[in-house]
Image (cartoon, rainbow, N blue to C red):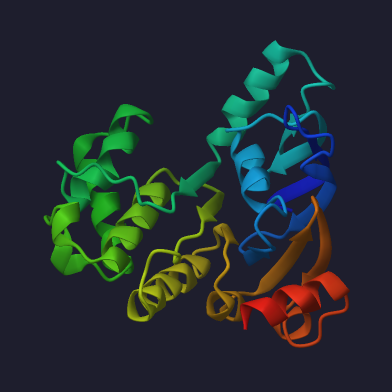
Length: 250
């Protein structure tokens, strides 16, 4: 499994109930998965815990063979080593793109590979160009973020994350700020990335996107209550909370 989450427990100060209550799931390599659930179900917290932006007290996150343990289960020094190794295998695409406005699309995608991975500038440009072209942006390599549509900016953000060669790519509501035509652009980009074998996990409230992925997990009150193919989960949900969620979204 490329991404495996086991028994994840996350508590927030001032909240008597854990946000994540022993949450578990595993995803094979290359799977495109949508995480669904109401606001407060734990989706964004799960994403931040997997990425290492938030700590968790118990359980494990395994990324491409690298295991990160909860803070109550391992020393701080050892956990820091685990996080460093895991982050090298992860990429994150933010909801608000977070592109550098003073850099072109190509420059946005070459900065981290050069400064973080030590790639030469020519090699980084070659890889970034290939990724941007793969995502349909061959005519926009030298454009600045302000000159791009929302869908194009999101595709640049995806290319930038892919330039670091992650094994798992995480998305936080990638289509929430986009109109329908731009949402379609991003969905096409996800499907193109899917063909490369990178495991993708998308937190979303977009049912059209959820129907187009390969696997769906529904979260409720900090646990996965239902998982499977979209045709099964979205058309014939078993859990009452899933049925209520889909009724509200439709």
